[in-house]
Image (cartoon, rainbow, N blue to C red; front, top):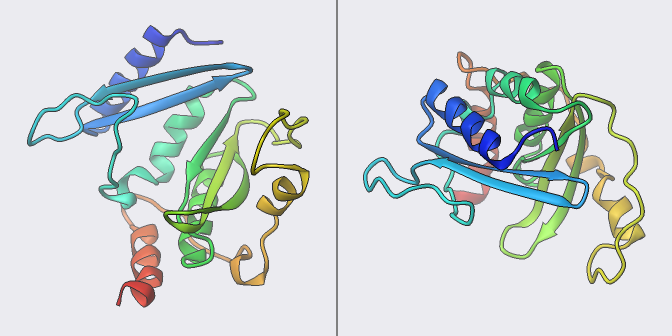
Length: 190
């Protein structure tokens, strides 16, 4: 692994301090080794420290999901590393979903979107991002209950109502993602 746990903790601390983010978590998967780190606090009000098993509720998606942040991510990634970004529902909010992918690409990363059914959320999307082309996954581990070659292939297929569409890059000065997200989710949240 290109970074030790201590180095990852130090880098995450530097990033949250540089970008005035109260707290964050990071998980790096390198082969069969998973390293989890956390830095900062869960709440400025309570000062409760961030931990790797804590649940962060989203603050401003307009600040975190920006081309500026993703450029920092791209600089920090080891060659060939792949990040997976939770990117909202491509069924409920396709413009918001594809804005995340477009913003990652504007930061110089290669992307590959996927979606799965999450029982507590419904159809939910993620975008893989890498500083190299993202090839097909290797063979799936034995004994999985949900993921198999068919469900794996379907995760990367987007039907017309979730298909890619023209969207802007999200930047700190335009908050495009916030507008798309709020408009699309408002239909369901009434």
